[in-house]
Length: 222
Image 1 (cartoon, rainbow, N blue to C red):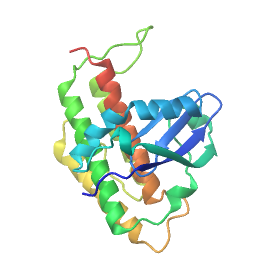
Image 2: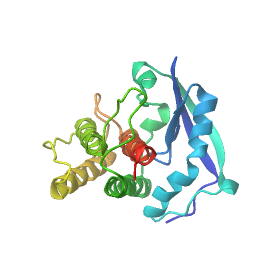
Image 3: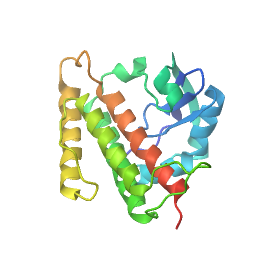
Image 4: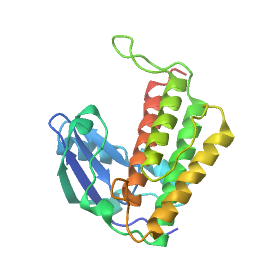
């Protein structure tokens, strides 16, 4: 695929307790901080981690020399932002997406899934707990991630049954349905009023998958 660009377009979502910085053209590369500056620093600190996903997608990694960031959208956050999820759409999410860009972003979403599956297979079943003993173990994280993606899927017209975490066929069918729906949505004359445009759907799903993949790595006991 094409060489990585020199400019990383960012969207900032600024809440009262948390802010998110998201790379609009690199779905899944989105991190939070207590304010916009911290969020951007967190994003940049995860460049090497995100490069592992980029390589799985067959795209050249982003190097320091290529890393120029430009904030093109900034929106006020809400309770979802402060809870810990990038929940606000920005103007760039409504941009039309041509077939080549859809293929590139879809390949990154697929790479996020592959990365997540690899992490889940490699980490310990029991995860490090918080200071008060809270937190989910690996299987609960995987189940939560799959269930959240089913909810996200409904925003683009995909309805799949609940999946067991070890039902590889059901998971693959669900993911294939997501990719097909994204293709159909990108070709539609207009986006559904209450649904998600394809750019946002891809970046929201990719963020959630990677966020929990990195969580499992951070809490791995093996």
